[in-house]
Amino acid sequence: MATMTAPSSALARPTPPAAPAAWKPHHNPWAIALTVTLATFMEVLDTSIANVALPHIAGTLGASSEEATWVLTSYLVSSAIVLPISGWLSNRFGRKRFYMVCVALFTICSFLCGIANTLPLLIVARILQGAGGGGLAPSEQAILADTFPVEKRGQAFAVYGMAVVVAPAIGPTLGGWITDNFNWHWIFFINIPIGLISLYLSNRMVEDPPHLKERMEQAKHLKIDFLGLGLVALGVGCLEFTLDKGQEKDWFGDPMIRTFAILAAVTLIFFTWWEWHHPDPIVDLKLLKNRNFGTAVFLQLILGMVLFGSTVLIPQYLQGLLGYTAERAGMVLSPAGFVMMIMMFVAGRSLGKFDPRLMVCLGYLVTAIGIFNLTRLDLNAAFGTVTLWRMLQVIGLAFIFIPISTLNYVGVPASKTNQISSLSNFARNLGGSAGTALLTTYLARNAQVQQVTLSANVVRGSVPYNLYMDRMKEMLMSQGMSAANASQMAVGQAYQQMLRQASMLSYKNAFAILACTIFLLTPLPFIMRLPPKRAKPDPEAMGGH
Image 1 (cartoon, rainbow, N blue to C red):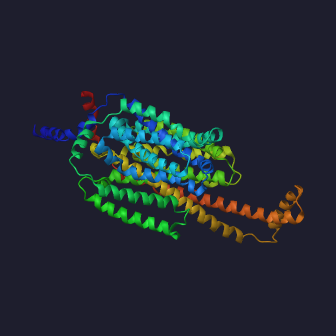
Image 2 (image 1 turned 90 degrees about the horizontal axis):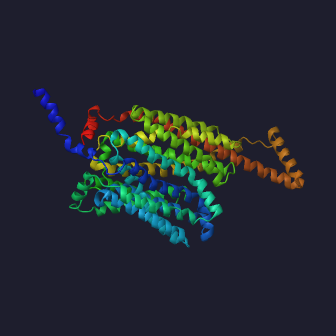
């Protein structure tokens, strides 16, 4: 009997921590999932639409193209600052309250962006809009993690993931259509009805679980870490600015970039030390000691680099080298978004049946093969071919995103759900910013190397060179050009062709490096622990609830 008593008492001890898992929301969990996904769709869609409309915004407001990029940069910096502190804000003021404030702020500022008639006013509105948008994704993931039991979280994150991947896929096409047929103001106005619906549904559906209410009561007696807030805002803001503007300003060759980079490094190092020793940290960095979460954060960082990096590279290739319009380039990406939507559903359904670590491993492997396949792109690639290869490239991403999002929470107390969501989203966004910055820099530098290599192989007077020049001169003269002008123009055409080929080779190399990096990550998921088998008495408790 003694041997029977010990296990029962051992099982009795963990009951208080398990209580939050037994909590059930009053409304249907899937209705809550669709409600919070609506705001995600609005926020992600707005980001991708704004990219397409940038030239129109610059032209209307009388700004240069460089000045107009602040419309994007201001949003990214503001959003990046709020992301890591959103978990603390949710614990302090209540997750539902914080989430609804973010939705309201994003919606109101969308209206202000739409009516802006000067660039400074638009940038201020975008800063405030970014502050609202930055708090949405972490809050939504934390809400899903608390709303659904462990065995159904994969399917819940699949619904959330659909919005994350479909919105950027249709964003460029929709943005191009709106700006061509109406004007850029409407890319912001379309957020208003979605935001109002989201606010109404969130007020009715979303609720804070008991463990979060207890956490709020405890937080009221703790002093606010104003120094931590200031440090994270300054450090992350400077880091995001450095990554976003680095290539444009020639990185450390520019004194402003050097200053911001040093400031970011010093501030973030001090912030890490300060938060590590603080009793109520703004960002709970000690969570990274958890093997599952630490590995998941690193994998989220790489996922951000892949997802954002490839989404930036392909449209640039199509527009810069194949002469596609922004709308047509968006049409290449759109089918891949719907493929990912289907694969999100498949991955969500598969999660409980297979080892999630194996799913992540295979996801990275398939993604690596898909990206390496893009090295076959050339200057004569057909629309259908690029579309198909992009669709093949994204098949594995769902099998990375959903298992990682689920394994994030293994072995972490329910009271830390908000911190987990904010840190993992911050890692993914930081990976996206870093990946985009590094790839853009690599393309510019490698294209110059390829130019030197190609020009060294051009031998004036050689048979291939003479044949090419003769063909070009004949073609130009057939259009009515004089022999002297045609000869001069042929040299220019040959040089332009060499530049295009050099740029194409740099894209091929970038895809190859990205593919190799992802392939090297395939063993890493197995570092993570699976949920212990004995944690599965939860369904019995749920049944008795």
